[in-house]
Figure 1: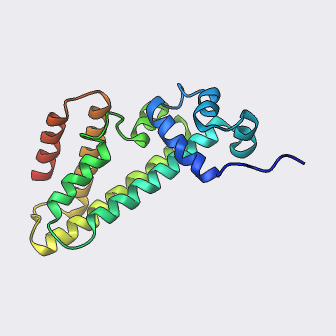
Figure 2: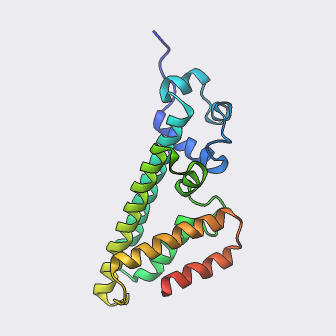
Length: 188
């Protein structure tokens, strides 16, 4: 009988998000994980099976957390456009960091060849578009957002702006320039 687990697996997954976000999947070694997470290599493999499995757990955790935050930021009373602008900036990391979006980074790194990553990314992008669509629909009903585009089309454009800006942020683009890109996306 093995020793009892002396760590919280959910906390480890949350911490792994930061490691994979900073380093990417390929550059993160099992030894990096052991060192930064403060768990033994045996615990890593006994609990999470593989680096890849931990990566997908971290990616799913990150994606769910981001979409929960996005939905919460766009619900409620008050002007929607400033909240949309803040949400786009947060999703891309503008002014906060130059890490981009973990999910976008994962897709860029491993492409759609990794079915687990592709599934998580597809779910995230669908959920993001639905959250934007719902907010835009509410904004159109209140008169704050023009009705020249359907909520679905406008949501797709905002999602593309968030993803593109996340890539630009990761590439080190000046935050002021990124802010102008987001402002333009909202104006359109």
